[in-house]
Length: 390
Image 1 (cartoon, rainbow, N blue to C red):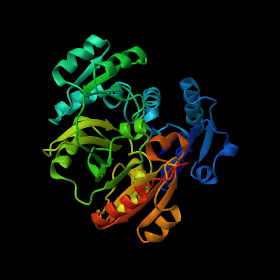
Image 2 (image 1 turned 90 degrees about the vertical axis):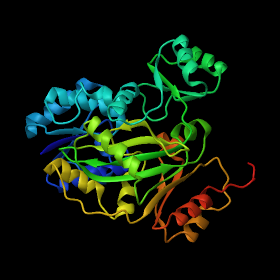
Image 3 (image 1 turned 180 degrees about the vertical axis):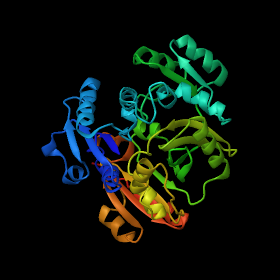
């Protein structure tokens, strides 16, 4: 099997996907904009060959790279990046080279939040009221039904970039005065706790691995308000969350892909569909899969690609948590004190690349325990601040 992997050097720990593909017997062909001499050794070792392009947004250059690989290695079987940013590029290359996977005709279902709402409804999953708004009159018509606050987000955005909470008419006016020239969706603000249904499906769409996480707050609040964040896995998936998640997998026709489906749980226990991401959850969550269940999700994914499916025997033995810290905040307990006090629980300390720090903090502690009480205590201790000033 010939697999082309786009941007194998970023994020750095994703080279493990390439490494596992190579170990599974695939020919792994990387395309990126970094000079070969600048690639970390572990990335180089995970690839059969690497092709450098000057500009990752130059689709013609990427097409030429795939043409080169085709001439040298034969038909290309897969084109992957596991990165939401490159979903459109993936689909276009698959179209051109007739490869398995999400094609351009499907991409809007995975990229546009307005289309996601339609898919949620088809799956009989509740979703927030909302619509595309191109004028302030469109927005006012929606607010007349929902009231303030509302959330404005790019219809085809990535993460929380360009997402705003609007609390009143003045916020609405200010938003439209500076609104970027892209489609925006406006939806009612749902107050609740964020949960995600996460995992991997095989080639036929059957779940190979599933788990769930709950979050201290949304990425919008984390980014816009400069907060630190925490989220942890659940040992048991709530029944309604799992039911909604499985319906979404069928509605979105998720095949041979990771998924990260976000929900709000409201005060009355209702799960409301927020959005669907056809990629692994962000940050270091793939590592957290492994720590929570004592598995190798990188190897599992590679086996799914190469063989179509895999028989993964696992249990959710631990809650696994990520808790971040920000360099501009003062914390009661030093880094050394955290490591000393909780060394039997901490499995990884992650330095976060700058491009992700607004969402994931500057440093992340990953820890696990069979008991949720330990998770809560450690998270509280990591995040406890003091009153010192600069």
